[in-house]
Length: 318
Image (cartoon, rainbow, N blue to C red; front, side, top):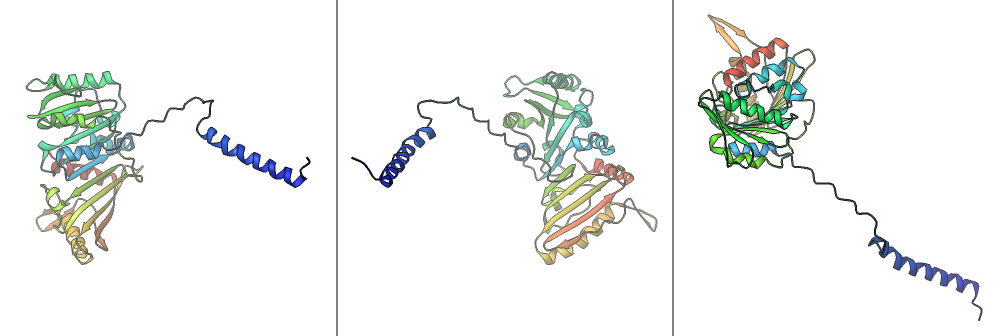
């Protein structure tokens, strides 16, 4: 029996379609011939070191420094010499300016030096970090010691009368905590560190309730109606720096008043009165309002940067 040509073609189409219906599911399921399995890439580690530090400290103030951006800038040595790192790392062979990649400091306020949590990200070999902690133990008064039951290698050291716990969190973190929070060092296990910068900034300061948390001797007074504040520092090749600040006020109307109050407050804090004269340490800093936000942008000369770090050394927790 002969089929018409069009019938034969139609049968071929059905046969081909049936073949696809059978073969495609087999291919998608691997069929009988399974190829080599490709292991899934491990999930990226969460970059949550700052959040962990804030949680441990109950912090409302935080400073994140992208040290790799400050390494070859004059400000790098000044930042390394501030009270947070220098007393602990001095004499250990670790140079904060040269050896740290990123560092974060969290505290409830500028006046809460005893509750500071500091986290440093580095690229040093483990034996060098361990030797540095041994050096901290050796210079501690009274003598320091390794904590035998800690989940991560940790030592108890006393520097300038304050006892701290220094923890080594592999592969690349060094954590300094209050003695009461020694066990919290293990919370940093598995962290991927810190978020990358959003722009060219080398440091970011954040504060909640800055009227209270940034209150310190020699620091400008912040209006209570500003509920949060951020400052970003960008370093320039000439040795100077640009500082962009922003604060959240309670309303657009209040932001205008806050801008005027902050302008006056910063002027007072950065000026010296000699008899009837007023000598400014910096050029005028003017705050403006945009909606419910208060903002300022300041260009600091290298000489201004020196003066600023002099003021910071007075205001930061000891």
